[in-house]
Image (cartoon, rainbow, N blue to C red; front, side):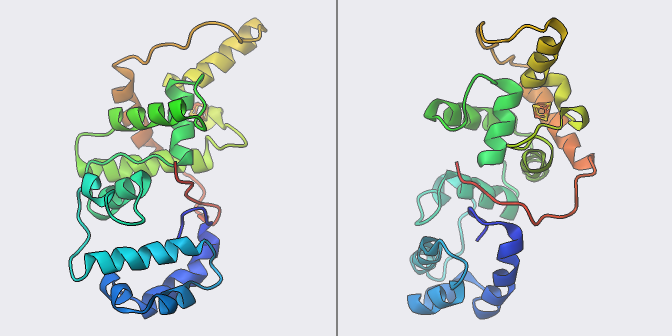
Length: 225
Ligand code: SF4
């Protein structure tokens, strides 16, 4: 439901939907029209159809935990597979949505655009490289990077002064150099990603959870990359 839709909008539908369909098996046993009816008003109806197809495909089986298997199921892309594996099963799985891609590229590869295929590929590689060692820590880490993108390093504004990863952020460093020299920075090669930095990023990003982010989650949305 949160794909491309704000939390505040989803909240009104989520509880009612779960009331009608407490499990995936309930979705699978229902007629598609009943699922679409429960989804009515939320929009992006392909999600409801995909959910129904997924539930029918699974039958009485439960969702697999491996993102490589999840991604083969109907309606589950790379982001959703990573999110399910990480958040539902605490697996060491990467995920990249628009917020995560923006943060990772700003920190490590500011010359790349997350809207391009090259940028998306780099974002996924960085997401893999910065994962903590355990699945449980990955849950927190992934949530922290998403929160950083939603509250501190947003598409509209960068709150670098209160960002926990500014010490290793190339975008921040470049903007400081630009301010210090007064020279427009339009030339020069992108710095190579230091092999030590993803590890440093992982621990710095995890410290995001200690940052007192706004409690209001109503503006959150998941843009699938
Ligand atoms: S230091 Fe600034 S640009 Fe870098 S991740 Fe933080 S908010 Fe974004």
